[in-house]
Image (cartoon, rainbow, N blue to C red; front, side, top):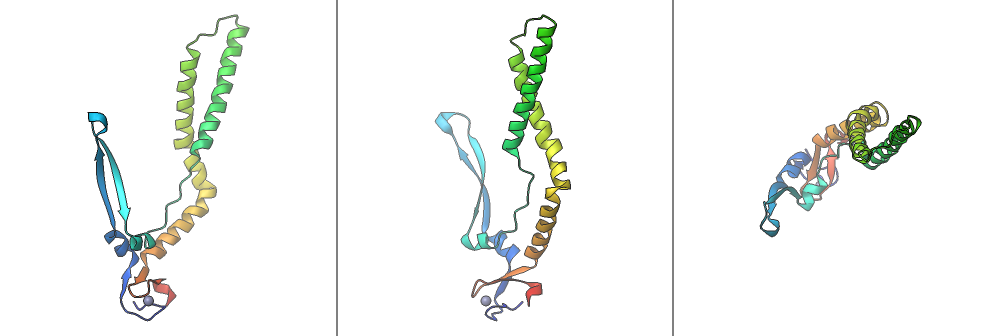
Length: 156
Ligand SMILES: [Zn+2]
């Protein structure tokens, strides 16, 4: 593979440069003599960052799903309170705890089981196709050690 920009033959695959320049390790912190906390840390050199693969798109919507769950939980609570009033019963204070559980379950179902398939079927379809193309292109891309130009096999 010859560099398309400067003609140098000193080119290397981006995927290899990225892997070589990226280290992942575990850092441990022990706050106040308690049990240690572990965190995964990934560090990349500046060159590896230039050679990194495309980011996989995700459905997202973390905050939006919290908002939707909150609104649905309020509706649920309103129905429970209304039915209690119609039946002439006292509303149990336990409804607060129940509402928290309902909100968490709603959020979990919405965020993990409803949104991702809808996203893949709609807006995500195009993004995932573009990502697969970009990933295939990245696997075939080379970086020049002399001028730093990144080129793909087909660009010659
Ligand atoms: Zn070059």
